[in-house]
Length: 79
Image 1 (cartoon, rainbow, N blue to C red):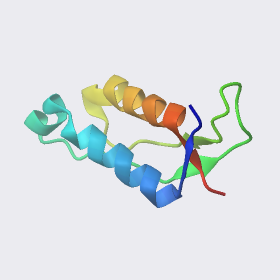
Image 2 (image 1 turned 135 degrees about the vertical axis):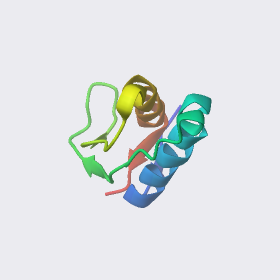
Image 3 (image 1 turned 45 degrees about the vertical axis):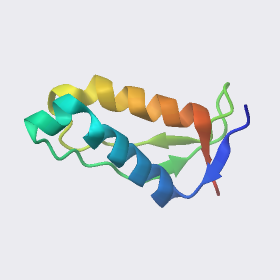
């Protein structure tokens, strides 16, 4: 499946939406800061972006990483 091209804002907003939709994050009331993605050379999978410092992930870092990895598999940054 080919990746969809998305803007940095679209990627950030979707990561934010998905992370804050996770039941545990909602229940804890955590506000996790999601930065804009950074363009990179495509990796072995073809993904051309990464996400820098996630603010205030608390105990939810693994969940945040799963969301980021899922979007990295589906979307590329339109640079």
